[in-house]
Each structure stands twice: as structure tokens, then as C-alpha cells.
Length: 170
Image (tube, rainbow, N blue to C red):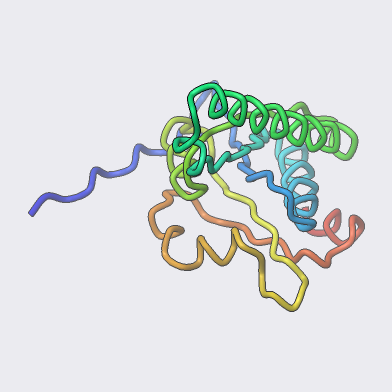
């Protein structure tokens, strides 16, 4: 029986490195809470912020080649605009310039790859939704078992907290 490879150690405390907070950017209202909190935490600890946009393009492969290329380009363009919006928010609230990354695949796989590739990522920040539908699709998905595979802690920010409340915590 083979064991899964051990995750590479985090480098965020080594000389020449800094701790980075990873936020998955999506279209949910609570996403702003995660970006706000992570931006303030990163600025307050002289860390960095990585904004990850994930494109789940499972239906694109079945399209004709030209149509698939157009759909993929459109999705990348929309995600780049969303990342720019949240990068501007991070600059506004904390004076930091986050890294912006777009990946294709499932969200859990994209998060795992990002953490594996960037060994300065030390914390994944998510925000819980406030609606009657539960904590939101990302928190629900990760709570269903994907989180145990990540070699970093996950901070879940309550989506109902105000900027002032988040400032007090960050």
C-alpha cells in the first residue's frame, strides 16, 4: 500500500519569504468579506495576498473547437475582471497589491495545486454566507472532506461581519 506524498513544508517563515493568505474569488456576496479580512490580516502582518479565480469549464470540452475557445476566452476575461475588482478592493482597504491567479478545474483541486505550488501560502481564507441556504457553496464543498487534504489552516469569516468588526479582528 503506497502512502500519499507528504506536503512540502511551508516556507513563509524562512528568510526571504512571507506568509501569504489565499482567497478564492467567486460571485458570492460573502467573497468580499473574505477579501477584506485577508487583506487587513496580510497588511497587519506584513504578509501577502493571493486571489485565486477558478474556472470550472466542464461543459466547454463538448463544444466545437472554435466555440470552446471562445467560451474559454470569455470565462477568462470575466474572471480577470472579477479579480481586478477585488484587487482594487484590497488596495483600497489595506494598501496591498495582491497576486491574481486564474486556474481551470474544480475549486478544491485548484486550491490544492495553488497551495502545493506556492509554499508561502500559509492560510486559506473563506467567508460563510448568511442566507438560509447555509454557509455557501465553497465552505460547504470544502467541509465535505476536501479541507483535510490542505496542508494549511482554513479561516472561515462570518459573512455578516461589518468592515469595523473585521478591522477589530484582523
